[in-house]
Image (cartoon, rainbow, N blue to C red; front, side, top):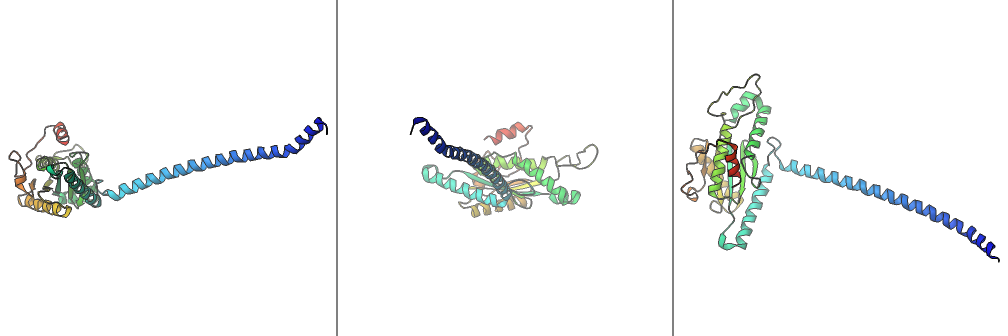
Length: 269
């Protein structure tokens, strides 16, 4: 067979193969594009699911009324911080356990707010006050709603004296916080000596007042009862001997800051 005929024969025979290869290439490119689109869609769906999961986790951990942490989150946080303090003691036994303090805070006088504004607006007032209290603690601290008008503050790496300073600030903030007002016209200060609310706080520290969460909370509850018995608008420690002489054991809210800068300095302690 001559060369031209051979070339023509090969061309005829290879034409279907070339066409098939072209079709296969098109299909592969389309398949790759579809796979890329599916991957992009799956990534977007995964990001959406992660966002929803994070939102559900936040919802499950936050109190719906006040917006601060709820009781469940407080339990988990307190257990975690106690375990952290114990691990620090195991690694450095000569230093003892890492300091940890809890404050059990109860707001008094809130029934008058409910009677004046109704429960819906009173809930808004409570939320605003809870957010204000959250500004008085460090980012590493945890503030949550314990029950009703009771809040729990977990203070890692904080001893009795530091906790006493935080308790003073919180008592002062509850008494002097400017409550929301829905009245029309110019706002008048109907309570020149405060907003009608006061706080009582029970203070307990690890390990002096307990080495387990339940024991520590019982100590804080007993201190809270002592603050109530003292007339309110104050805090009481579970173990007064744990405080040094330059910190007022009476628990009166003696700090009256003249500016937010004082609060900021205390938060950065």
